[in-house]
Image (cartoon, rainbow, N blue to C red; front, side, top):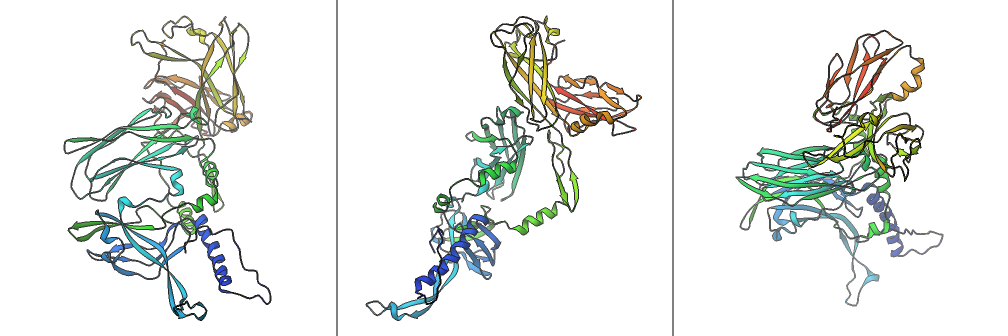
Length: 597
């Protein structure tokens, strides 16, 4: 009953004339039980498999429905029939101290069918033994705060921390522990009402991080009025800076945590979540972590073998307790089976998640799947950016060519479009603060502009070599004037529309095409520009302009684009009305730092 190791396995070796003793039959049973329980434990996990629902029948009794569960040792706990149980008869009832309690269930064996064993008689003549061991269960009651939440595999990928808690409300924040390229990261704030006392409250906190695009945002819920047990969910969406992938972990800090209630303000300590940006896909990361570790260490560790199947809220008065409400499986201890996975897959054909209109989703699904022989494709469109330092050594001599290291753009193999610019940081004379400028193209045009930077603008020729098969590029520069010992700070932007590869390799087969001049436009926030099309091997005609980013600004039927307030890189698809297969793309870089003309 108390064996947890379950291995190494040893079974009986039968041969003609073998004398079997009781230990041989015990070994036979142990071999079969241990193998089955090891599989249960490592392959299926632990928790409720079916049934075991708990409901209140009156103020002092519950109904435990029949069902099955697996405990943390892989043993099957079976409730064979539904029964009514008084709370006062359950172990632990008399030691409860609070109103919130948990009902637990654990595996138990009970010897049955007593017999007299002649060969087992002791000195006192007592030879009582039992013919069978009946597998059953035992119930427990324990205060909720004393219940230890058993770690689950999902805890390695989803982090949860309590931002604020009192007798009336509990606010918990959930965040993923990792993020992969071309994906958005979602946070989840749950505000749970824990008391019956009516109240109106306002919750707010700020989220800051150096590794996300919006370095600061606010989470807020005003004039919140909830009934007991209700949960309000607030969701946040984060996009990690592209240069963070493959580097150090990001710390996302929740600070200025404040709850206003009845004219009083309550504050809580800051909370920090650590998120690791990793290369690859979600599946790659989960697989790489799921099979790590030593089995003997994991299986031999100490843990609580009780399963908490219900949370019961009591109303206590003196020695009497009344059942107020019951919550099923408070710690989410369930075992998923293959039938559930099949049902979920089937539901994908009938239930589609809509794209959130209020979420600036930069990256869309980039996969395709087969459903009953039909391939369903999704739009594939990605972009990335980054910055690197490029040294010109001790020379920086006129006409000498300098090359950067090979830069990985993170958009995979195949053709991409890459643009680079030189970044300048200087002191603003008026505000005494740092001022950033980025020059794309020929910097000599701004060579006489002293308002850009205190230093001389670099006059260089620059070129980019893209390596499609490696998913990388190399930047080359050639000084036009003597520069001396210096280093350049290069900012790059890479784009890969879903049809770029097809257009690059099939351009010769097109009878006509459209180009945008220029195809990359730099605008300040809320700025406007007319997208200028050029028709090649075809007459001029009416065009359609489609903005591919949900919050990427506005574009009218005449090609006038208005940038949003949010900086970023946005894309407009320009297509011929007579033949939508003839189209191209314009890219707009919206920067908060305007270039003075």
